[in-house]
Image (cartoon, rainbow, N blue to C red; front, side):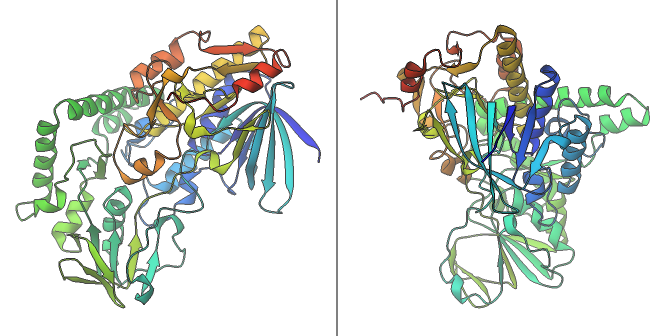
Length: 505
């Protein structure tokens, strides 16, 4: 099998992959870059999900790329618009022509002797195999399992005669017009589906075990709207909105963590104001504190509008069993349903399931820490892009892409073939990088699949944009914890160092 060589191989053509490729090309003129993408189009998550009403749950001023203004005044955007925005950004940056679609990275092995990755790739359109070698590898697949969502088995569901669907695999021909719909879940997907389906369905009920904190945002950013009417430059308008919204994200998160009781009071007060006097606050009062789980945002209060109109409803209860015609709850109430949507969450799988080895030795990602939240301990020449859980994903993706581009430029200037972060056992905690952050379901499941949290800098992941920006974009590349080598210079020692770390007794 003929091996194709590139300087940088990016796995994934979603937001993270496009940002990584763009930054690398800009900082390293002449570098050969190829992006591998399993799907047939750019967009990643925004090409995968097709359920009604799909939209961002972060404001587009910060969810959009830092290098490309989001030109609409709408604060949250629909999935189709986001996908097109990502594709346009890829085309303008010269990345689109470097993407090879229908390719799934199966395994990657780094050789210290060669100073290169050997990557085995499956062409999913033909079933054939391809082989790539790359000086540097960027894992930009996110951490969702694109094949299988999280889908618990419910008692009695085999007896149900209606349609059962998960949002991750939404059928194109599913027509909910005039149907009774029950959406199981209380996260961003469920809260999006309710108003999106309410106008056409006979009824829509969101069935939740426990509520989520919900915050209504304006549909349109008033400041951006005014600046656009004044014909202010798009980049200036984007910069103003982005700077303000980053500060608001950080400030509100810090406020909620420092003053949880007051934050809870404020958030529930805003819900009362939106939902009206007759609202049963039991449906909107979580048992946990603000930002123990991610906040859900609704544009223009659309959720509250359909609830007040009577087109939709919320049931807070536990499932006893499915019946032939719907769901019977622990309280004894039965929800009749022609369609049940299981908005029960996502499964976690890092690197798209690609097997990772160094000099033939398997790498257990869950036993490694991240250097500056980008490089994986003991794994040479690889960046792993993990976005924020408490802010817009893209803020972190852009920082990781910028750091990767700077690192590659530094290596080229100084003639380094290999860069490897080296940690000590004391740098590793028992938690994953997700385990201390939030308590939502997919975060808890991610604890078993993600790298460990570090105990100190530069191994600790802070989920703090300002701190990360100083560390990734401002600090020098040279660092005592980052080892630079020439290919073949210390093969034996490096290979030994790639073995799984020994845990302290």
